[in-house]
Image (cartoon, rainbow, N blue to C red; front, side, top):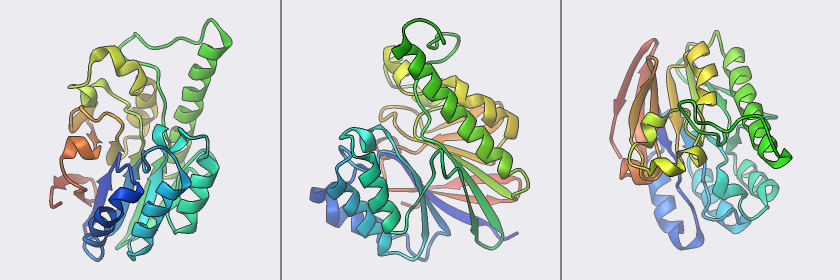
Length: 249
């Protein structure tokens, strides 16, 4: 199988002021990579006009773009409008109703996506107990875990498999963030389907002051938040069971 080049970024936080910079960043990828993956926080505050900036940038390139939403994209309560604009621009959004995406690209790449959610790590996570509001948080994380596991199961026979999240499944990529807020940056409950199905690559964002690379029982995990990477995109080259990463942007 020919190697597949995947450009990834999270927390691009598009807005009208950064329109030209966004256009340049995406146009620089066109023809150079096989797939673009965006790990949430696509907009600054979840306003439709901010989503339109990203939509314009992605519509200007021929490369397939696959994304999940992040907390910023839902902040204004207009997630449906944001999603409609992005999908109208040709971006493939992965959510609970649209879990998997397979791209033909010198073979086959499968992407299982979920936003993920909060909860905490290392035995200090939120329990399924107490007030309904707290139990609702636990239930939302459960739904995201099930979404991720279901998507990876559907891709079991795909030669290359990527898990795309916004929230982190491991505290190792949160190193650099204050431990007091780790509960709000992800949950190790998201790790269970990753360890079970062992995708070739796990990508997430959200933790702007976190750490770029970690291993989840041998499964490579990358925090591709733009502030962490210090560049617009990180390009990964995947081939079969071999995993390699190279920075070119």
